[in-house]
Length: 448
Image (cartoon, rainbow, N blue to C red):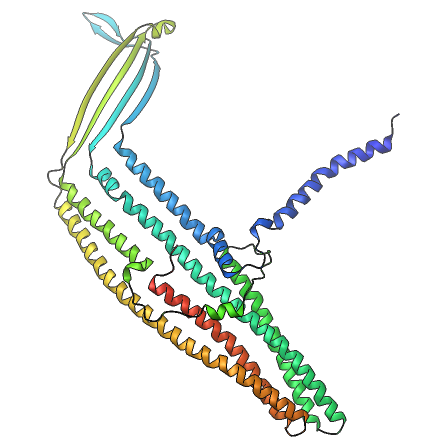
């Protein structure tokens, strides 16, 4: 039996299906794939993720592939270059000439030709340059990729430590607020009991408000620093990222051998400069090769077809072929080749000075980063001891205040000292870890 209601329902389902499908697809596109998200990653996992997903690294890898294809294209000029052409021509009106007073037509109405041609480079300075520099160009592309990876690793590592330092500051702030709330409660109770005046609980109120404001500031800064870390990683903007950390492990990672000596050859920037110099030496040779002649071989084979009747055009062929060679030697070019050689030599000499300048810069950078590391390490060790001392002082003064032998002002000073010492300690830990990364990079110990 026919049911109009059921028919309408089916029609509605058919109409709504595309809309529902588009909604699901849009929702899926908005949500990052689960396999691209990290669950409580450590620093190693964060760095590994960045090396796989960071656009800067991917662009460098793409450039490396492009360079390889360009090299393949240039080296292909060493191989025989074979071509095939086919054509057909219909002569509407044949050419006519008067011979002996009689008009004579030349040619036929239909012509066709199959042409096979080939060339072979025997010697040419362009292909010789491509062959002699192919390996160096590939090395240069690989070194560029390594340099980009090193930049990403250094920046991601520093951002990771920065997020940890801010997270620790937030944790310290939350603990301070709990302690200050307890102090405010005690000060208020003593004021209500007539043991202390109202300035004590008002000081506690001020300290609590300041601590809350500082906590809010750090929380907002943490949001920014997490987004910065995501950007440096190539992480989905809408993806959650709660990194895992161990303060004790971070403290163990601060150690660095400060007696190491700088080796220029280990630094990626120096490697790139040396490779660039080697390529420039090849350019000098290329300029000299301008005095050497070029030699190419060529050949061709043609199958020609001619007939007035198109149906019989390909019944008979008339082949012809040839081979030969081209020898080219520029005799005089107005001293152009000599000028080009001098230009390339001066460019090479300029690169030699660039190498010396780079060596000085690398030495200065190593000295600066090592000095910063030593300074930050000394600050860290001092502040680490200050945290223990400040906590001990605060506990003693807090007990003395509750016993009535200390003013609340002493408690607030001790509280401020403890909070400052803890925050400075985590900042110092971040600074020493970041400066350690700078030293390792200056030494060329970060390699990918």
